Length: 264
Length: 190
Image 1: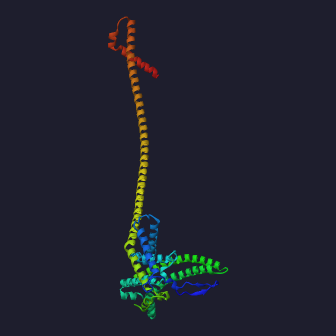
Image 2 (image 1 turned 180 degrees about the vertical axis):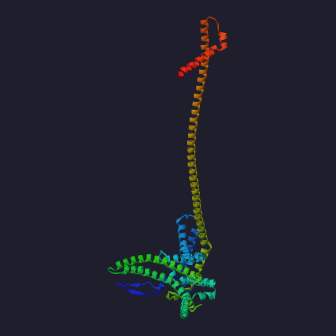
C-alpha cells in the first residue's frame, strides 16, 4: 500500500488515510476482482429483501407491530412524500418501485458507513453511484422520448420564451444540463459525500489513535478530543447518509417529472 | 474493452485499482451495482409494492367504510331524533286537545246538569202546585159536600123533617152555598 506519511512529535510516522484505503479487494486484484463493497452491496440486498419480505408478508389493516409500521412509514414517505408530490398523483405509481428501490438501497449502503463492524459506505466507490445514475439517466430520457417522440423530446428541452438570438446558446446549455451535468452531479454528489465523509471520520479516528498511542505531553489529550470529534462527525455523517439517499430519489423523481411534463 | 481495463487486468500485483483515481469506476463494482439494483427492483416491483399497495387500498377502504358507516349512523340518529321530536310535539298537541275537550265537555255537562236541575225543580214545583190545587179543589168539594150535609142535617133537625132527598134534588143547598160563596167573596173583596 502506498501511504502518505507525516512525522509526528513522537517521531513515529503517521499513516494518513488515503483514497487507496477504499480499495479493498477480497478475491483477485483486477477489473473484475471481488471487492468488499461488492459483498456489502450483496449484503444490503439480502438485508433489504429479508426485511421487506418479512414485514409485508401479512399486512394488517391496522399495523400489527412496529416493524410493519416502520416499513409502511418508509414506503409512505417515498410514495407520498417524494413520488406523488413531485411526479403528480396521476402517474406516480409506476415509478414508486424504482424510487423505493433506489432509496432503500442507497440508504442501507450509506448507513453501512457508520455501523460497526462494517464501517464502509458502499457508495464511496464511484462504480455504484454510476450504476444507479446510469439507470436513472437512461430512464428519464426514455420516458421523455416515449411521451413526446424523439424529435419532440429534443424540441421540448428548449425552454419557451427565449429571445431568438439566445436560442442556440440556451439550447446548448440545456443539452449540457440534460446529458452531462445531471448524471454527473447525481453520481458525483452521492459518491463525493460518502467518500469525503468517510475520509474525515478515518482521519479523526486514526489520527486520534496515533496521538493517543504515540503522542508526547498533552498530545494524547488531543487524541481524546479527536476521538470525540470523530464520534460527533459519525452522527453528522449518519444525517448526511440519510439526506443523500433522500436527495438522490428526490432528484430522480424531479427528472422523471420533467420528462413527463408537457411544458419544459 | 477500454485500455484502462486491459491495463488493470494485465497488472496482477501492486495494483492499478489501488493507485487509480477514486473517480474511476471499477467495472466489477459497477456491474455489481447494476445487478443488485435490478434484483432489488424486481423484488420490490413484483412483490413488496403490490403487497403494500394492497394494504394501503384495504386501509383506505376500511377507513372510508368506517366513515360512511358513521355517517349513516349519524343520519339514522338524526332521523330518529326528528321522529321523537315530532312524536313528542304530537303527543303534546294531543294532550292539549284532550284537556281542552275535557274542559269543554265538563262545562257542557255542568250546564246540562244545571238545566236539568232547573227543569226538575220547575217540574216538582209545578206538580206540587197542581197537587195542592187538586187537593184544594177536592177539599173544597168535600168541604162543600160536608158543609151541605151538615147544614141540611142541622136544618132537618131544626125543621124536624127529613128534607135530605128533596133538598139535594132541588139544589137548595148548592145554591145557598154558592150564594154564601159569592157573599164571602164579596166580603173578602170588600
